[in-house]
Length: 126
Image (cartoon, rainbow, N blue to C red):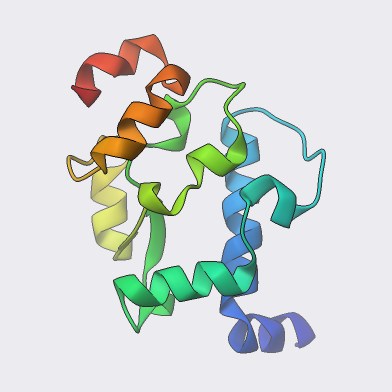
């Protein structure tokens, strides 16, 4: 019950931790530092960003425009989870998107991360 209460009162903290957990799992890395250090932002900063996308952000799933699995294993977690790579999708939209590229990736961000994207996916980023 206390976990449920915590999730309801601080959804940003749970989403923040979940982002890190899923990213580490998909790029096959171990957690070697604090969440705030690895992601580069706090739960409150994540919430503030998500609120710019939708005031009802907690009703959506956080999706990566460039899928996590497209990144090389040596990619810093903060690059994969940069705010410019995050978007909100409904559960059904996210299930449809799966492991595909989203065309609305910020050009500056894309140029910064190309060095971390697996070669087989680079052509799709053009």
